[in-house]
Image 1 (cartoon, rainbow, N blue to C red):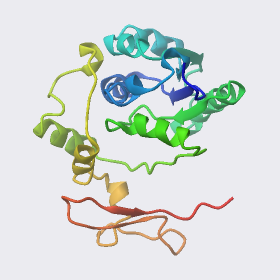
Image 2 (tube, one colour; image 1 turned 180 degrees about the horizontal axis):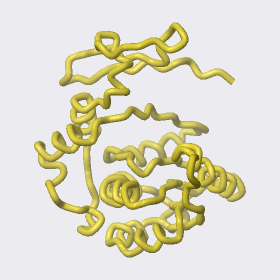
Image 3 (cartoon, rainbow, N blue to C red; image 1 turned 30 degrees about the horizontal axis):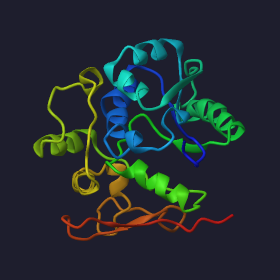
Length: 231
Protein backbone atom coordinates (compact mmCIF):
# COMPACT_ATOMS: atom_id res chain seq x y z
CA UNK A 1 0.00 0.00 0.00
CA UNK A 2 1.40 3.39 -0.98
CA UNK A 3 1.74 6.05 1.72
CA UNK A 4 1.13 8.78 -0.87
CA UNK A 5 -2.14 10.26 -1.98
CA UNK A 6 -3.31 8.77 -5.29
CA UNK A 7 -2.30 10.46 -8.52
CA UNK A 8 -5.19 11.66 -10.68
CA UNK A 9 -4.18 12.19 -14.30
CA UNK A 10 -6.62 14.28 -16.31
CA UNK A 11 -7.02 14.89 -20.03
CA UNK A 12 -9.81 16.66 -21.92
CA UNK A 13 -10.36 15.78 -25.57
CA UNK A 14 -12.96 15.20 -28.27
CA UNK A 15 -12.90 14.37 -31.98
CA UNK A 16 -10.86 11.98 -34.13
CA UNK A 17 -7.76 14.14 -34.45
CA UNK A 18 -7.02 14.64 -30.77
CA UNK A 19 -8.22 11.16 -29.84
CA UNK A 20 -5.59 9.80 -32.25
CA UNK A 21 -2.89 12.01 -30.71
CA UNK A 22 -3.90 10.73 -27.29
CA UNK A 23 -3.92 7.04 -28.18
CA UNK A 24 -0.96 6.97 -30.59
CA UNK A 25 1.48 9.19 -28.68
CA UNK A 26 0.35 10.54 -25.29
CA UNK A 27 -0.83 7.30 -23.66
CA UNK A 28 2.00 5.17 -25.13
CA UNK A 29 4.60 7.60 -23.75
CA UNK A 30 2.90 7.62 -20.33
CA UNK A 31 3.00 3.81 -20.36
CA UNK A 32 6.78 3.59 -20.79
CA UNK A 33 8.45 1.57 -17.99
CA UNK A 34 9.37 4.49 -15.71
CA UNK A 35 6.15 6.43 -16.05
CA UNK A 36 2.68 5.20 -14.99
CA UNK A 37 3.78 1.53 -14.58
CA UNK A 38 6.41 2.69 -12.06
CA UNK A 39 3.94 4.50 -9.76
CA UNK A 40 3.34 3.07 -6.32
CA UNK A 41 -0.29 2.73 -5.37
CA UNK A 42 -1.31 0.78 -8.47
CA UNK A 43 -5.00 1.11 -9.25
CA UNK A 44 -5.55 3.58 -6.40
CA UNK A 45 -4.25 6.04 -8.98
CA UNK A 46 -6.73 7.25 -11.58
CA UNK A 47 -6.73 8.46 -15.15
CA UNK A 48 -9.69 10.80 -15.64
CA UNK A 49 -10.86 11.25 -19.23
CA UNK A 50 -13.19 14.18 -19.90
CA UNK A 51 -14.73 13.50 -23.27
CA UNK A 52 -17.90 12.80 -25.24
CA UNK A 53 -19.81 9.52 -25.18
CA UNK A 54 -18.74 8.69 -28.75
CA UNK A 55 -15.07 9.35 -28.01
CA UNK A 56 -15.25 7.26 -24.87
CA UNK A 57 -16.60 4.32 -26.86
CA UNK A 58 -13.85 4.65 -29.48
CA UNK A 59 -11.10 5.05 -26.87
CA UNK A 60 -12.08 2.00 -24.83
CA UNK A 61 -11.92 -0.23 -27.92
CA UNK A 62 -8.19 0.41 -28.45
CA UNK A 63 -5.49 -2.02 -27.28
CA UNK A 64 -3.51 0.86 -25.75
CA UNK A 65 -6.46 1.58 -23.44
CA UNK A 66 -6.47 -2.08 -22.38
CA UNK A 67 -2.78 -1.72 -21.49
CA UNK A 68 -3.46 1.44 -19.49
CA UNK A 69 -6.23 -0.36 -17.60
CA UNK A 70 -3.66 -2.84 -16.27
CA UNK A 71 -1.84 -0.15 -14.31
CA UNK A 72 -4.32 2.54 -13.33
CA UNK A 73 -8.08 2.98 -12.77
CA UNK A 74 -9.74 4.74 -15.74
CA UNK A 75 -12.58 7.11 -14.96
CA UNK A 76 -14.76 9.13 -17.33
CA UNK A 77 -16.51 12.47 -17.05
CA UNK A 78 -18.83 13.12 -19.97
CA UNK A 79 -18.74 16.56 -21.58
CA UNK A 80 -20.82 17.82 -24.52
CA UNK A 81 -19.34 18.53 -27.96
CA UNK A 82 -17.84 21.99 -28.36
CA UNK A 83 -20.56 24.51 -29.30
CA UNK A 84 -20.15 26.65 -32.43
CA UNK A 85 -18.21 29.84 -31.94
CA UNK A 86 -16.34 28.67 -28.82
CA UNK A 87 -12.61 28.02 -29.05
CA UNK A 88 -11.29 24.59 -28.18
CA UNK A 89 -9.24 26.03 -25.31
CA UNK A 90 -12.34 27.58 -23.77
CA UNK A 91 -14.34 24.36 -24.10
CA UNK A 92 -11.52 22.35 -22.51
CA UNK A 93 -12.13 24.44 -19.40
CA UNK A 94 -15.46 22.64 -18.94
CA UNK A 95 -13.67 19.33 -18.45
CA UNK A 96 -10.80 20.82 -16.46
CA UNK A 97 -13.21 22.39 -13.97
CA UNK A 98 -15.14 19.16 -13.43
CA UNK A 99 -11.97 17.10 -13.11
CA UNK A 100 -10.18 19.45 -10.72
CA UNK A 101 -13.26 19.64 -8.50
CA UNK A 102 -13.27 15.84 -8.32
CA UNK A 103 -9.52 15.70 -7.64
CA UNK A 104 -9.92 18.23 -4.82
CA UNK A 105 -12.79 16.27 -3.27
CA UNK A 106 -10.79 13.06 -3.33
CA UNK A 107 -7.54 14.70 -2.20
CA UNK A 108 -5.50 13.37 -5.08
CA UNK A 109 -2.39 14.72 -6.74
CA UNK A 110 -3.72 16.33 -9.92
CA UNK A 111 -1.70 15.87 -13.12
CA UNK A 112 -3.18 18.00 -15.91
CA UNK A 113 -2.33 16.79 -19.42
CA UNK A 114 -3.17 17.64 -23.02
CA UNK A 115 -3.98 14.94 -25.58
CA UNK A 116 -1.13 15.98 -27.91
CA UNK A 117 1.53 15.78 -25.21
CA UNK A 118 4.40 13.28 -25.01
CA UNK A 119 6.48 12.57 -21.89
CA UNK A 120 9.96 11.12 -21.73
CA UNK A 121 10.52 7.91 -19.82
CA UNK A 122 11.07 8.66 -16.13
CA UNK A 123 8.98 11.84 -15.98
CA UNK A 124 6.27 10.28 -13.81
CA UNK A 125 8.76 8.49 -11.57
CA UNK A 126 10.37 11.90 -10.99
CA UNK A 127 6.95 13.37 -10.20
CA UNK A 128 6.44 10.77 -7.50
CA UNK A 129 9.87 11.56 -6.05
CA UNK A 130 8.91 15.24 -5.84
CA UNK A 131 5.68 14.29 -4.05
CA UNK A 132 7.59 12.19 -1.53
CA UNK A 133 9.98 15.09 -0.95
CA UNK A 134 7.02 17.28 0.02
CA UNK A 135 6.75 19.49 -3.05
CA UNK A 136 3.20 20.75 -3.50
CA UNK A 137 3.37 22.02 -7.09
CA UNK A 138 5.50 20.91 -10.04
CA UNK A 139 5.45 23.07 -13.17
CA UNK A 140 6.69 22.04 -16.59
CA UNK A 141 7.40 24.35 -19.52
CA UNK A 142 5.15 23.38 -22.42
CA UNK A 143 6.53 24.37 -25.83
CA UNK A 144 4.90 23.86 -29.21
CA UNK A 145 6.66 21.73 -31.81
CA UNK A 146 6.08 21.20 -35.51
CA UNK A 147 4.44 17.81 -35.98
CA UNK A 148 6.17 16.84 -39.23
CA UNK A 149 9.80 17.58 -38.25
CA UNK A 150 9.33 16.12 -34.77
CA UNK A 151 7.97 12.81 -36.03
CA UNK A 152 10.53 12.67 -38.84
CA UNK A 153 13.36 13.00 -36.33
CA UNK A 154 11.88 10.41 -33.95
CA UNK A 155 11.47 8.01 -36.88
CA UNK A 156 15.02 8.67 -38.12
CA UNK A 157 16.51 7.54 -34.81
CA UNK A 158 14.20 4.51 -34.58
CA UNK A 159 11.95 5.67 -31.74
CA UNK A 160 8.76 5.49 -33.79
CA UNK A 161 8.03 3.45 -36.91
CA UNK A 162 6.50 5.14 -39.89
CA UNK A 163 2.92 3.97 -40.36
CA UNK A 164 2.65 2.13 -37.04
CA UNK A 165 -0.36 2.96 -34.87
CA UNK A 166 0.62 2.43 -31.24
CA UNK A 167 -3.04 2.68 -30.31
CA UNK A 168 -3.61 -0.56 -32.20
CA UNK A 169 -0.25 -2.20 -31.45
CA UNK A 170 -0.92 -1.68 -27.75
CA UNK A 171 2.72 -1.06 -26.91
CA UNK A 172 4.40 1.72 -24.91
CA UNK A 173 6.63 4.40 -26.39
CA UNK A 174 9.87 4.83 -24.44
CA UNK A 175 11.82 8.00 -25.20
CA UNK A 176 14.68 9.22 -23.01
CA UNK A 177 14.86 12.83 -21.93
CA UNK A 178 17.92 13.43 -24.12
CA UNK A 179 16.20 11.89 -27.14
CA UNK A 180 13.15 14.06 -26.57
CA UNK A 181 15.25 17.22 -26.26
CA UNK A 182 17.28 16.35 -29.35
CA UNK A 183 14.09 15.92 -31.37
CA UNK A 184 12.41 18.96 -29.88
CA UNK A 185 15.12 21.56 -30.46
CA UNK A 186 15.17 20.61 -34.12
CA UNK A 187 11.40 20.82 -34.45
CA UNK A 188 10.21 24.07 -32.91
CA UNK A 189 6.84 25.36 -34.07
CA UNK A 190 6.96 28.84 -35.62
CA UNK A 191 5.16 30.14 -32.52
CA UNK A 192 7.98 28.85 -30.32
CA UNK A 193 10.65 30.30 -32.61
CA UNK A 194 9.35 33.79 -31.79
CA UNK A 195 10.93 33.49 -28.35
CA UNK A 196 14.52 33.02 -29.54
CA UNK A 197 16.77 36.09 -29.11
CA UNK A 198 18.57 35.21 -32.34
CA UNK A 199 15.45 34.32 -34.33
CA UNK A 200 14.15 36.43 -37.19
CA UNK A 201 10.70 35.72 -35.73
CA UNK A 202 11.53 37.19 -32.30
CA UNK A 203 8.83 39.56 -31.08
CA UNK A 204 7.98 41.55 -28.00
CA UNK A 205 4.69 41.46 -26.15
CA UNK A 206 3.72 44.71 -24.40
CA UNK A 207 7.28 45.93 -24.75
CA UNK A 208 8.98 42.84 -23.37
CA UNK A 209 9.28 39.15 -24.24
CA UNK A 210 6.79 36.85 -22.54
CA UNK A 211 9.63 34.36 -22.31
CA UNK A 212 12.86 33.84 -24.15
CA UNK A 213 15.32 31.12 -25.03
CA UNK A 214 19.06 31.36 -24.69
CA UNK A 215 20.53 29.43 -27.65
CA UNK A 216 23.20 26.87 -27.02
CA UNK A 217 24.79 24.17 -29.12
CA UNK A 218 22.05 21.91 -30.50
CA UNK A 219 23.72 18.84 -29.02
CA UNK A 220 23.42 20.21 -25.49
CA UNK A 221 20.00 21.86 -25.60
CA UNK A 222 18.59 25.28 -24.84
CA UNK A 223 17.92 27.26 -21.72
CA UNK A 224 14.39 28.58 -21.29
CA UNK A 225 13.71 31.70 -19.22
CA UNK A 226 10.18 32.14 -17.85
CA UNK A 227 8.63 35.11 -16.05
CA UNK A 228 8.67 35.01 -12.27
CA UNK A 229 5.51 33.59 -10.74
CA UNK A 230 3.83 35.85 -8.20
CA UNK A 231 0.95 35.21 -5.83
